[in-house]
Image 1 (tube, rainbow, N blue to C red):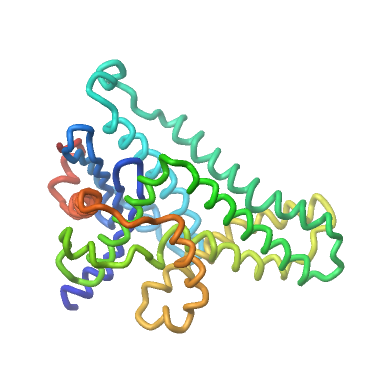
Image 2: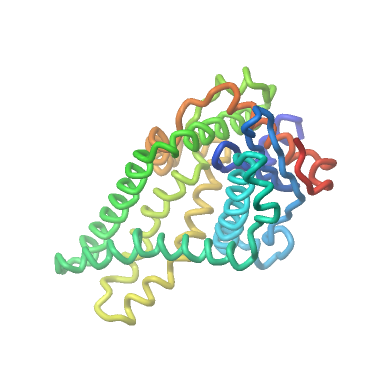
Length: 306
């Protein structure tokens, strides 16, 4: 296997956070944050996914649901570290032990799932039922269209939030850095700057793939006519997430993008809203996170490096 193939098969994933970027590799997780003083603080620690430690959890479809939960947990922790480093030294001295408790992380993840379920599954279904469609296909097509509309409105609303502009810039820096890494080139500020900020394996693309997959799955379930039917329908959401994850993984295979481009095209277009062109300083932060996530020595130290 060539060095370039090894780099592409590593599949580093990232996440934009406030004033920083979190990178996750098979070796571990690293979050790099630009501090008020202008330096870069890095928190790195080893991390092996449950899907790599348990054969059953690594089964296709099931691994998607597990990965989604893990991603939310590490993202919440990365946001906490980012917010902490973005504060001044005086603010940190007032709250020296302001870490996140397990209960807080669990509550935040549960709230995220609950809000997602309410906005993107329950409300679209209830609105579709008001139309009283007789056709199963039409019912589920409208349900999916409303789900897509809710996602689009959600994204448009958060783009109006001024503070999110910086997050979207770091999101773009994350994508450019990952592209530079996967393409086998030098992961430098100059090299990453020339890459695209639209990446097919982005959470934005994942949301839109979920909509398409949900329509296909729900058509087989028919129209829900009772509370029991609705509960059965909602019980398939983890399956939909798992299938969507497998579809997203396909985009990493050579040639698949050309054959299944219609699945990834909407997500790439939507990233015009969720990513922005980053500055060189922001790309530098993303590269720091990437390098730390691959550095065995930094991961083993499990600390904060400034």
